[in-house]
Length: 179
Image (cartoon, rainbow, N blue to C red; front, side, top):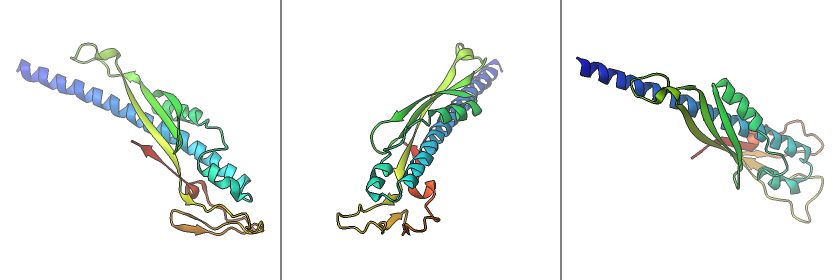
C-alpha cells in the first residue's frame, strides 16, 4: 500500500512539472508570435508609406526598413501568461524573434526533493515571411503604373490614383512559429 501511495505521489510530481513546462511553452510561443506580429504590422506600415516606390518593396518584404522592437510586446504577453521572457531578434532571413520564457511559478512541493524552487524554461522562435512575389519594375517602367504582385495566390493590381484597397498586414506577411 505504501508503495502505491509513493507511486501515486511520484506521478503527481511528474504531472506538476509537465503542467509547469506546458505553461512556459505557451508563454514562449505567445510572446514570440506577439513580437513578430507587432513587427509585421510595422513592416506593412512601411510598405504603405512606400507603396508608390516599388523599388523599395523587396527590401521591406525582406524585413528591412523598420526597427525590430517587438520585444516589448513579447514582455506583455509573457506577463499575461505568468512568465518572464528574454527576447532577441532572430538574425538572417526570414527575420523574426527568439524568446525564452521562464515561469513565475515554481513546480511546487512534491515527493521529489528539490522541485519546490524549480521554474520551467522553454524557447520559441517566430518568423515573418513575405507572402508576396514582386517583380521589381524595369528601367523603362511607367512611373504611373504600379507592378502587379501576388500574395498567397491573390493577385493585387494597385492604381496609384486610388489606393483605397491596400493589402492588410496578414495579406503581405506570414507570421508563424519556426522549428
